[in-house]
Length: 149
Image (cartoon, rainbow, N blue to C red; front, side, top):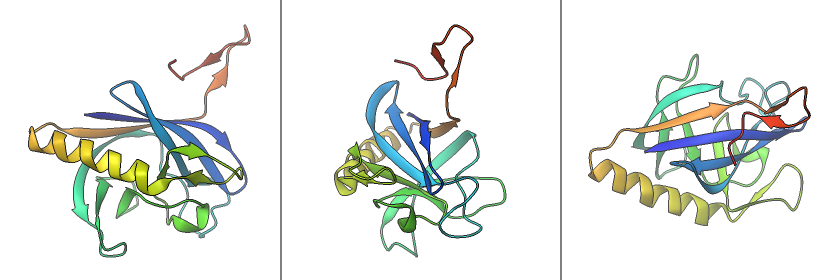
């Protein structure tokens, strides 16, 4: 199963993106800012492809998708949360973006839906990967490149 995270908007506090699974819109996400994270030393995840395993989070107290081999980092997960303060460098999931710029809503619902799909993929013996894509650039013709429709 392939999860893609397309970063869309970056503020001083966070990055909001769109999450797709197998190319289909799934939910939104919120990550810490790359330059000024709320929790010093815990910026956003670098762009790249990471294997995902379902593991127990001792910090959170529940099973989450954990990204494997994130350079210079450990225990990087996708989990519940709404605002930058809820993340120590992890990806927070939400059904919608807002009402504030640095906020995703209905996080429990988005997380539960993702966990269901991850558990099903794991039961089928499928590899789960997450690919993080940087904020799209505008081409010289004025169209946005880097984010599929």
